[in-house]
Image (cartoon, rainbow, N blue to C red):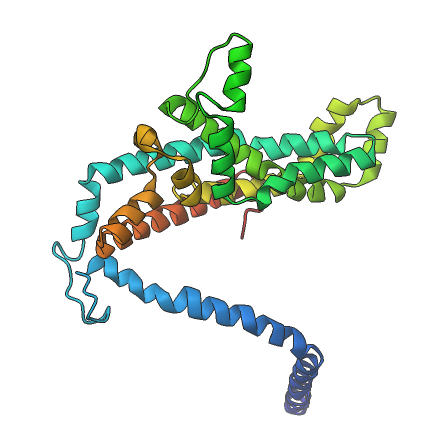
Length: 324
């Protein structure tokens, strides 16, 4: 009897397995268009992101324009010749310091700005005024840094700039905003916040809309004011979004955009404006030292990945979901 029972179970399992295959086939026939749409971005990432990754080997080899990356000879010191050259280069060490400093100040001053703006916009009682303010705030995001740099050089010009004329009229004196290293850093951070604060606010406003309105009603019945509701309901409600964006921002702590510092810099502030991306441009493109530039870029990417994993692990340790 037991053997018959086992045979029956095996027969049922064998009969049920084709059913799962038919369900999978029916599912694919129903949603094949979605997978077809996914084919284009997958093709893009494979061709332009994954296939070129083998050129990372240039960082460990002596670059030759007439040889493929596989035929190039290995660099000295077991392939680490250009990493050693980079860390013995004063320009690279200066660029590394400036990159960390500017990104840290961007994170310290720029990360809380959209959160504060989102909280303020959420408390506005007039929806039309709220929409107009939000639109004005995120419009600078669509301006390139070349345009912003041109506007900044006109507004902050020492002798003819509108800002300096206003300061001079108030008796405060003129300020070298783009020529003095200290004021340049302040202007750099300010322009970065102005350009990105409105766009990042949209993310937090979307997160705020997902908070249950009944929580605010219950808080009002308990006598909570606006500040109490923001502190005990709104901020905890958007905390997962804040943590996720903070992790991504920490992952870019050693990354550096090129157009922003390059467009705003000049020879008087080179000691604070030269970042890793400008170093790679000058040594890699202008100086034709492709192996050195690739080594620096690889070092930058590896450190960013380490920061990303460390920030994600730290967020999970404190009870947050993290990025993955």
